[in-house]
Length: 323
Image (cartoon, rainbow, N blue to C red):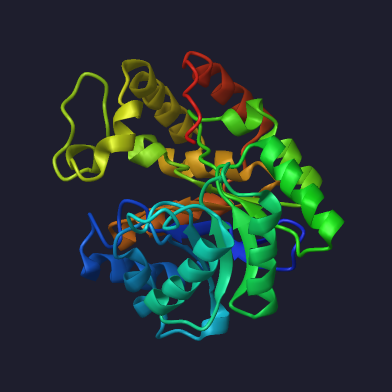
């Protein structure tokens, strides 16, 4: 495993991280989830990501990692989405941040959260209120660092400016969706803004919900037992099951074979070509998937391969940003 600094901070995270969206606590059995986390840890993954909005995921992740030394891994979680029906049960107000931090600490079974992330931008709460609350939690030692997820370049710039004026601890990360098919962070200046402000990118869905493993073929039925065949988890992946996308995966698979890699390894290496990316978060239901994906950190893509990849991807129309 290789490690990168998370933005300008001194925190180092594994180039491949393990996440729990749509998997642990829901679609994947608890036994399988624990096996995947143990394998990830054994292979050098030190970054584990979850959220208070992933049903049961914080409990499963926290209890599994508890057998390891707390200082040997980086535990990240998030808040924003509704946790109840009350008017203050969502968002990034001081009240919701403080209450949800305490709730996550209990579910995770830990004394502190390494990286606490704002899962989305809250247009109803002043940004300075959110940043002050996060800074206070850091002063109390309940969180060590703060980050955001799916914030625009303008929102990141505003937050960074406020942190500097108020002398608050800076944000160190942004977690956007990013893969060969969804590249809005390139078009909308998010990458440049994060580089400028010192935020590292922790990207999710680098394999496009499994489409960039090559398991879904154009003109063929969806394989049984896959994420796309599960009505609990196929809400996002269905957007990728387009003929142009699936035809693209065939060509990308052929290109990956030319360099002695699987499509998933190729897709992850393509993500890691960006210096501002600190970690790519994978999801896994089987330990073998983790072993395969981790080989991506050794794969170096030449300019010619990158150029050929762009030619293949040029046939795909843009996806709308996930906000």
